[in-house]
Length: 585
Image (tube, rainbow, N blue to C red; front, top):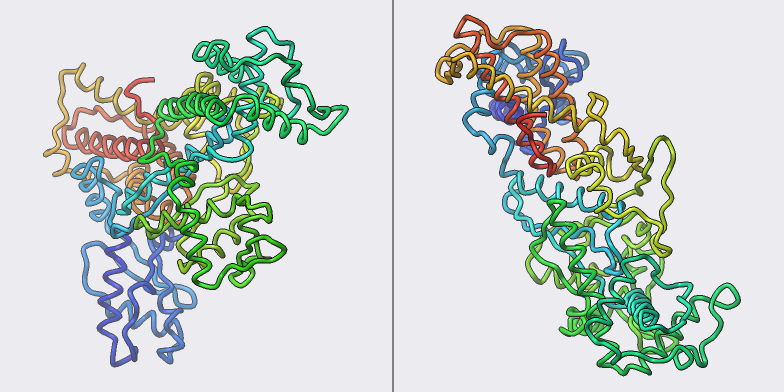
């Protein structure tokens, strides 16, 4: 509908060129929006106010000329000028009926478009360190990233979903040492667990798996392991202690055996993460390993490219990148004086690799604590000769869980956290997906466990799904009465849908394509949740006020067509959100 009205304006403005307008008007400048107050019309445009100065007319004068030049259209009952120069459009009832026909005819394709024109987009999300199970914060990233990818696909983008496995670096080494200590304890060694280790139950399980796989081959006496180590917390520094323990483990086991422990721990954690996300309905086209990136020579390639472009320099024995020349607050170290790469170097190489694979737009979903890293990454890409605008970062704010009004404490390192799997098992996948998406990703989310499990209209998940199930129930009642829905009769008698409640449902379903386009363009899946709640409310209100299965066949079939149309839109929207559309509740 919105597109058709914009096309009418295009034709009107074209007819005014050479008279009131002295130059062609760019298509992107012609925008039609839903009217804020339906008493003033269904849609409105401020195009006259935007073009008035160049036309040498007042906005109202130009608006009147545009309205007079509009082609005749069955979409409109009238177009009128309001205020200082707004153009308000009043739709004909038949236009809303045409929308219902589109819903019925297009089914699951209704709402999709080619707005993205095949643009290749990579959405990288979750990408949690494989040092423990996914927690509830990762779940929010998973729900957001998966739904954003769905929205982009629905609007014609060529979307690739990727999980970057941070399987290199110090945190993986700490995980490896934690597993080895549990392995030694399982073998009877009275070895204290490091204060900075990962101490949750999953580490015990991996330690037991390590012993089952290697027996005593990796075993060393506690006295041998502890010899020469500095004091751990609280008497000493836990960071120095864990680093010393990792170094001792490497020395005692040797490179190959150390690597075998690391690989076993990583394999266990990655398998757990993959299974958890798959059960959550979140899949990826690729799982990309940081360790594989390092082995491929990609980091050295990126560093060589920076050097060739004159973007890096040496200072105090370290290699620096001129990020301050491209919008960052200061230059950044790529390689330390001791020869060790900073995490910035492989991150840059990874994003350069994304571009080399042909992705035009890179959308990264990060935690809110990475805010300061955005200008650095964008500056690094510019230094590599890539456009800074190719990188978008969506920052996810934190999640707090509440049970009975009390906040649940969470902390990953000490094992006091709620996993995504635990949350899913308690409230279900559908509640997880929708509750995660109810608020904008840049707002803190309070997740009410009791509300998520409730079967009441206060629970938005129940409210949406109940609307879908109610339509299914109506169709079952129809069959029980020995009646059938006749689509031909329905489509021939849509004029019977002349009530205020029916108009509200028609208006709601007509907004769906615009809403999908808006949610995708603004990277805002929560807009879809809010829209579906509004559609469900319009449907429930109509359902409570009217009889669907009436004697008159024309009226009955028309109402059933509208109910089925609302159900189709609810089903389409829930599918994009990753939630089910039950036939019964």
